[in-house]
Image (cartoon, rainbow, N blue to C red; front, side, top):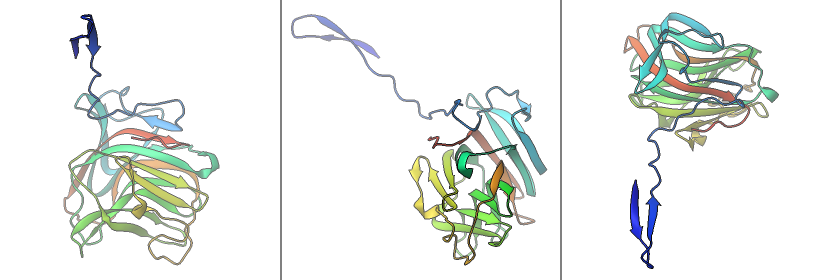
Length: 251
């Protein structure tokens, strides 16, 4: 907004008010990122890129327009999966940060203990690391975020927290850090640190076996559910501004 302001000496001064900040700051892609995808350069329709692959079973990935932006629509049926897959990933020091903006239409409400993954990192080593996922907890009748893992000596676990409900129907910016120094995974939601979701070599939900990262070479981002005949029977989420980096990306 521009307006005239009268000065004491009678001179008119031109005052330009600062523009209002955008309601939703966009991430975009920068050269410093190890990987980045904002979907703006991709055609609408079935998702495909020379920069990343696809891993699906009973699921689809589609580039769609949403409120002026291009986003990735992830759809799965039952306990299917649909992931954007980053191969040949070699983070320095086997440690990296990630960020994704997401909107999940609904989380599972059945069967009991159904758990879901949105980000999965694998490589040379038996552990499958899940920096972003969660589980439907029937004793609380809620779906809760929790860092998880599978395979290797620690087996299948999701370190869900009652303090971190999985919220459906609205956009959120989720960041994570995988730090190989002590096999630590940290999480931020909408720019706020969530120490309740942190796991480390020896602190990961009471499992007495040490949790150790593989040598990462693949990161998958999307959706997978691990129990059959779930409610709802199908799952939809929108993803945008995916980034992997050696330093924190931010929202």
